[in-house]
Image 1: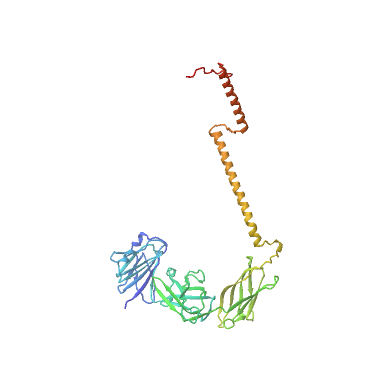
Image 2: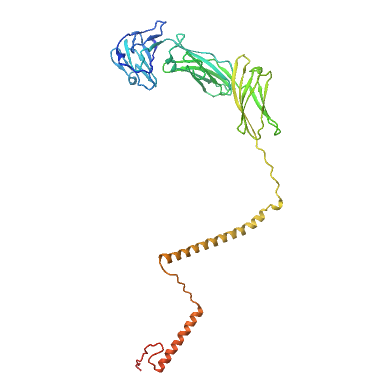
Length: 456
């Protein structure tokens, strides 16, 4: 029968020093049922010849390179050798190396890497997971606390660095019962817990995983599963099927009828699931004007609670509700109910009546619109033509005066001036004719007469 040994070689922040090669002591790696921890001195340990398979976990400084294993014959194992060596599996993570060796060589081995001189090897035997069963009666919105332990031969593992890489996961698996609302809901990953003393974990490094989660998934029939899954080990617990009920609280609001009244929020309690006399309610009201108001409703022996909400006119109101109490099985619970919202519509303002005499009928609008439109169009066209003409004239004058350097001349021919000029010309022609007839040598203007004779 093949035997599996899990060995944890713990490493911290210091670098490997040169004296780590010196052999001070070699410890035999074996189990006698009583000793689970063996000192790792000078980064050396011995593997017994009866071991068929061994798993080594080496913690190192975050971001430091992977460690190197030196076999008894002097040959070395590197992280990259796992690709071609079927007997070697190597998980090179950010802060640790997980190495599984099949049929390891017997004898003294050595680790080259960032290890502390006082590091120890933990031989893991029968690893088991224990967790408290979930309550049989739950309802949606309830907050549940759960604890789990990882045991080695029935005892908690006290190695701190080992617990740093192990987390407890909680899933809810739907039973796919068509009679419930969660039919076909699949798997709900609820929470993941670590033994680090943060969040809801009570104490760090105590070997107990403690956490809380809220049932914020649909009500129905579910199967809780708790498991740890790492390259080092895998353990799973499947608990009994449970039913998650709808919240045993029904909320309704009565709106104020007058502006001076307040809205009244009523919370009805289902006594078949919880004890009404133990229920305490607290929460916060968000008003439309962004104002917030905290409130607390103390326990009372009645099945309903009432909350007065100030009337800040129209707008949206939101009420957050947290409930504390005891169910009918005597288990105390804490739950967060869905936020209750209601809205006041904006009032419609009255519109004053319009004088019928001022109303323009469609017939009058049709008669008046074309004339106005025609007048407006002709005016616009006239303005456009006039402006363009003026611009062209001014442009011509500027070019002629400043560019061509020419004076501006206006040639205007008037009819009466033309007639007078024509009359003066006729008189002159008559005088010329008379002088020619008289044989005068010169005319009045001093011109020389033509005295040449004709051929006749």
